[in-house]
Length: 124
Ligand code: 5GP
Ligand code: ZN
Image 1 (spheres, rainbow, N blue to C red):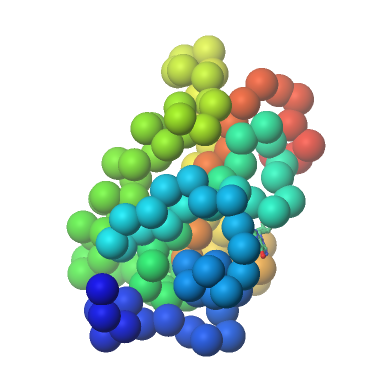
Image 2 (cartoon, helix red, strand yellow):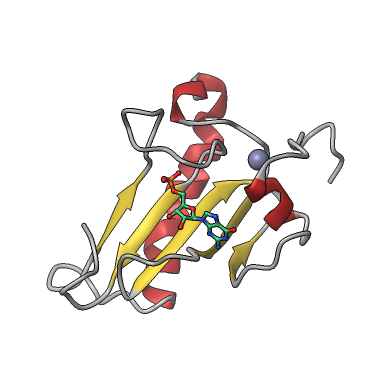
């Protein structure tokens, strides 16, 4: 896949993870989407689902990205169960995208936290 189709930011930590310049425990990868374990998990299952394209946040999403986001969301149920979340409704998970400073976003590459597993959790 060309860099034209998937522009990256050389200073972005998640772009570096996608490029294998920073190691991570990979959960899933395809042409457009990447998922890996959060380094500082809040819950027994906690991974991050990201587009390979460097999109800074949910605030940068418009109709053009609807198919990409649709594909990402459609992956969540499968990946969550594969990673050890318990089935709905007794189990389940949270899908969270912190956006901007007041939204608590620390890494400026769009990501969805997927958190689940038996409670109690460390946070959330
Ligand atoms: P935010 O606060 O931006 O929503 O979440 C960023 C998340 O990225 C945090 O939960 C943090 O633990 C995770 N994170 C930050 N740096 C790294 C890293 O180098 N590797 C991994 N695997 N996760 C990271
Ligand atoms: Zn990035």
